[in-house]
Image 1 (cartoon, rainbow, N blue to C red):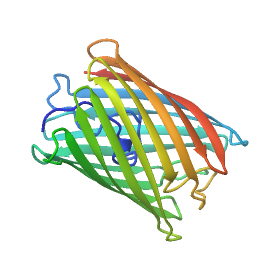
Image 2 (cartoon, rainbow, N blue to C red; image 1 turned 60 degrees about the vertical axis):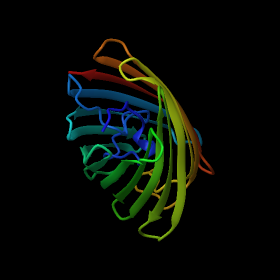
Image 3 (cartoon, helix red, strand yellow; image 1 turned 180 degrees about the vertical axis):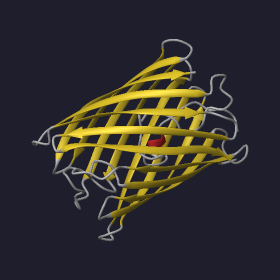
Length: 270
């Protein structure tokens, strides 16, 4: 498989590789045969919400290793709200099957406590394949299983990524299934980015639809809000092995709240 630059997993899978998502502006394809195979990424975020939902904040650390066949990663995420804090740990990997196909697998778990801010357990798998019809066009199909401590959910996703020189365009459509109530809903994303790995990336994302689950209080709510969201990110390499990233996001959960936030990230290759 030809080495490709990084792009948002959220375009193809729903925060795949276990919801660590340090930057929703990065990575559906592994970086192969990089001279420095190790990468560590630090990120922090802050969201301001209206309607008395307060401020949400948190951060994550992600360690990854790149090789021609298997590229594993490990991450730890922490989130804090007025109701309390919770941590989650995830483990995932890219597995290259052949020159045209690879899979992404992930699992995450969050310890029990007096607040639920992450899924108790989460399992993800996705297959990404070259279409073999249009140069630069690949297609992803994904499945996610969620356990929220008393409720469950499943997410089926599919969508394309199109590479054309420095431009990358992507989209996804997801079917969200509530394992308790049996309700189904749809959501989707479109987005893209422009630039070059090792120099800089500028990207944007738009999303719409009903989400698979929503965690607003000390326990999961059964309400599935319709969400309209957008984000813009910029990543720049400040040296040959380090990069900084910034992202601004706006989300409107209809009938619930609006949020405006930012995310900052730092990447080191070694």
